Image (cartoon, rainbow, N blue to C red; front, side):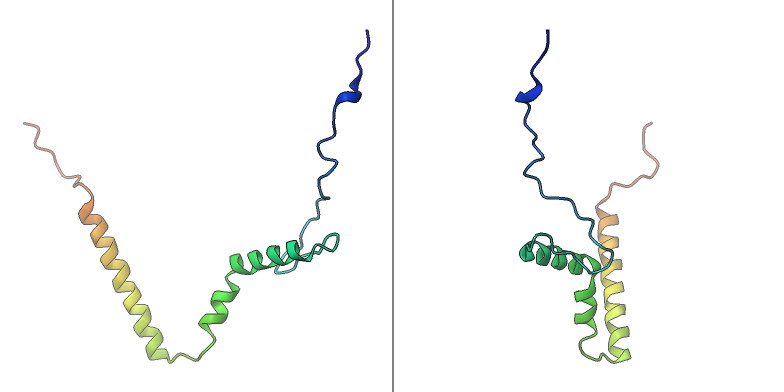
Length: 97
């Protein structure tokens, strides 16, 4: 008895060919699909943090202002850390007896 294997469909027939994207902020346009390549490029730039760095260095910032902002952020982090410690239940010795 033989079976007809022609009834199986190839589900990957409509799938686009896989193209390995280069490292860095480069993308390859496949089949003239520029919109897809632009979306990939925007995502790569966003994940690399390049735009944040550009915005940060767009204007000159005095060293005193940098230190002031850095200290303010440290104070804010410490305040947040202390608040989270206050909300936790204490792990001290229990009064069992």
